[in-house]
Length: 168
Image 1: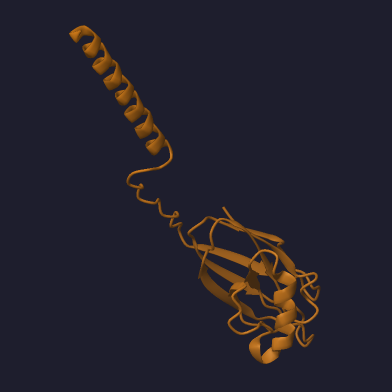
Image 2: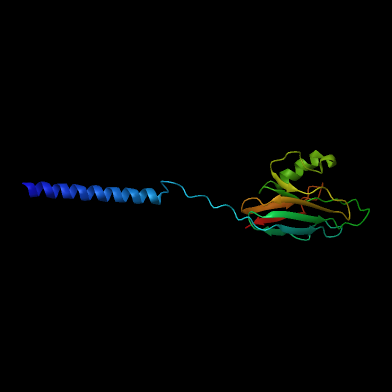
């Protein structure tokens, strides 16, 4: 009789051990227990980007800018429009898919606001409005990895003066 009970006890213990082992594997695989310390985004070296207008044309000289995630970015923009042309430019970094709406709201905001709606949460960074021959800059932290858009919000410029801002 004892051998039957011993076998049953042994069998039950083995099943219980198997269940516990399988359960702990599931917990580990599903991320249970303590979560690891999050890895911070790389704090890249400071990055300086340069962009300019192409003379009196409504174009930037670059349509793509790229920076590493976590970088402290300084963007320098030069307005190469001819003196006296009245062609002003700015550079505005926006959330994806918001370029046209930011530009339209900027026109409504007017020149006193540098053609930017005040406190617009779609705008991630921007330069001041640059007159002909002027150079302006802005320093900001790169947003999270992804592809963003940049645009000039001066009236009539946004359809041509735009590009992609890639954070890798």
